[in-house]
Image 1: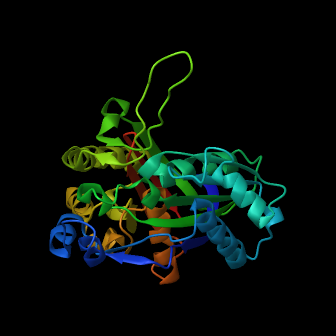
Image 2: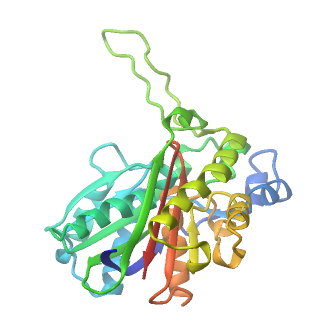
Image 3: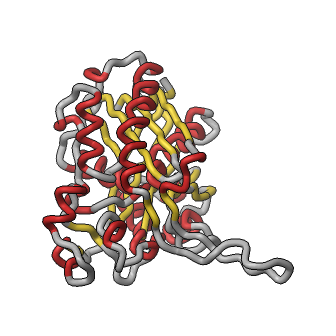
Length: 324
């Protein structure tokens, strides 16, 4: 066990709610078409905020909940595939906004596996005992990467942020195991944010295409086949059986994928809570938002064993098992 604890959780979503009926006014679709295929009724979409705004709001909430000062932080990590800009990176903007003058900051991009990958990086810093307190946030404004005329993609995604405060400890709690895997040979199943390059010395190297493109069937097959294998390995490393885990907090991509995961492990859906009905797919933010909702409702209790599972763009999968 790598001894550390999740001290606080928090989330932030835009006020603007876009329903399936709202989307039906923009394109040829309907709630009757979207919901049975995805489990999504609504998503939250920014009007004036950017990714750093959502992330900074989460950061402020985390510090307030824990009673920490920003100067207590050793590091801030933000996982995002939709940053404000390539530079400055989103975590640095957050660090500046909250005045965390002693913290170093950097971003990672592992798309929909970003929550687990970010926790892995943060936990490595803490387990080294060189750093004691850290903040990790998953934040996305995916609405700026969506072609709002493409009903196969635009119905899936929403904006939001969620995060955790982490601290090293001598208590018997922390990270029990993890398994991270990449499948780069299948990466074109999910594409977004391609830059054009027309440099002065060559022709057009790559086309400009900022929007999401997704092989829905391919991603569904990948998730239902490969994710259970990775989660199995994480459970085996922790010397646990599926029944030993209290909650499986999976990336909120599609309700049918999560139903398939629960069935594969012989577990009731109560152990695989979902919230995509209200938020859609918020990529690196989805698991953190769900964790905070469960924490707020009192369903998460000390001593529980929680498995975090991320999967998506890369393609990549990550699984961690924690003792809270």
